[in-house]
Length: 449
Image 1 (cartoon, one colour):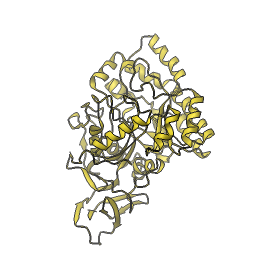
Image 2: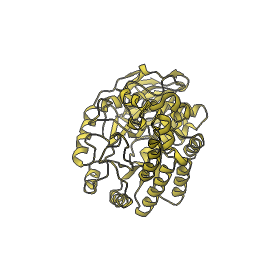
Image 3: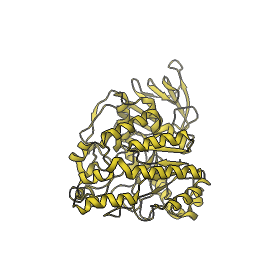
Image 4: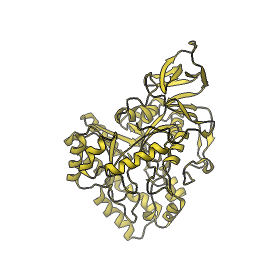
């Protein structure tokens, strides 16, 4: 039996000065310091003992785009970043729209994933939805967006924009009991807005950032209003990606008060990479999206009060070549940024600096995604749960560098950022997968969650 001793254990009931016992891949108990048991002792004195992050929004790029990333490199970063379960996304080649494609992806995870996993197939083919539900998935995904000037990262076969099609799909998914992840986007409004920028010859990172935040984020707000209303009409549990506007947070807050089964997420770039200074300094390397200051504070408020349930990385790696073109042709650059290696420690750092409570961070990163996506064995340090455990040092400032990046792309937008919390060790079902600065978990250790 393994004993993690001396740390501050963060549980759903709060912080405990207790030791964690692990046996057979499960948490066997939380015991006082005086109880003497355990033949293998892990010293966590002065450190935080946390549940591993359950990241429901991860782009592994395999199959089809492995020049950017693959499942092995993604899960190496996950282990280093305290993430013990990932859910992959369907914008692959071929896109995950059929049971056959889903089986191929799940086989790839089984072969190489270091951490536990699941996958969110695209719900665009009605006849495939029940078949994929039977394969143990926890959610489906769809994009309400068509790329302008490029064919990726939102490839054909993964999008759905017509409201009738969305309602039909929600009715179909509701019968499975699974959750429907929606990338909200009002394509008709975006065609008009970004068309005006391109007609003026404005194709820079600044123009792109402004276009997507135009009129206080109208393209996000109108799409989210539609999704919430259709979710209410269908009874389909929905999950909104990319929360980033004040009105969207208010809309979700009202919907929850009405009893709509909606969850929503904040991604790594919103709290830590969405300021105008990032757009000016990093250009395409910072985009994802720009969030104006008042909207960013509204999202922080939603994180603090629980309106925003879940922290999910939206890990989205692209090569330097795919980014560099964006300095002069941003609408041709692949948008999205890598983040799975650093999101949990940055959130923990924000908690220790007083921006948000530690308990809220742990709930958003672990307990809520496990609870809302049907993973009863994950997300909390409680007896009988999987021993997915992270030991973090809250007094170990370090500076993020490109040299430490485990992603295949070899860069991070956080290079030069100092973080006050360091992930020391990560365990997946009781097996150490990261420790002493090295990924030590074997490929194929991960299991479908």
